[in-house]
Picture 1: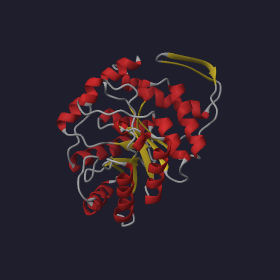
Picture 2: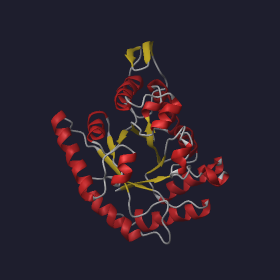
Picture 3: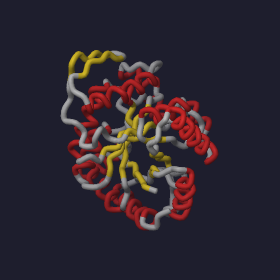
Length: 306
């Protein structure tokens, strides 16, 4: 089992405590020194006030945030969790991803999804109704941008008549693409177009809001994994699909001591199901305590191993 830690760059209310250049460098170094295989950030360029009041959060631009993390580290992988592809022209998304991968020495994991916030789509002038088609198209087009020259194609809202983009990503043919979402369509997208799947815990009430399938139990996850395996067989996919799931044993609102035993038990159970990565979020009240928690996680969980 490998672990990816969320950098608390959503805590814009704390200013330089979490968002300053030195703060972000310290957070990323702490995660790397603790043995985390990756660190991740979220993507919300234009959240609505209504969503924020209901518990939503702000976010730094993911590529800018991960660039600062990359500059302060040497080994830890840098993950978007997730990048909403329909918000962006695929040439711009491909350029940002290739630039970061080239500069960080091939450490990018590109987690992507179709998105679900109608108001954010509207603020960005993005097409909410066709977000699934746009997501599929973007993945396909970005792969061409990263590997081909003189591209000719016409997509939804763009036309390329002989275009090339350099630099190419350091990882060839491209960074791993992990697809987020619990729906059958998201799983098919992961199997057909991606290198990994990013399911996430979603109680029924939350699932309706974020327009996905509920995932409330291990049985729900098992059904999703079985569907992914069946679809892979159907379409002739032989490559292993990485799976990264969020730990339910610890979270950003947890209080008290790190429940190391519960996390290890959770990791061992998920590993048996076929999950290879566990996404971790830790409470973020101040930088020193967050870094101390990260160090304890490394000592009590990562070093112990499931």
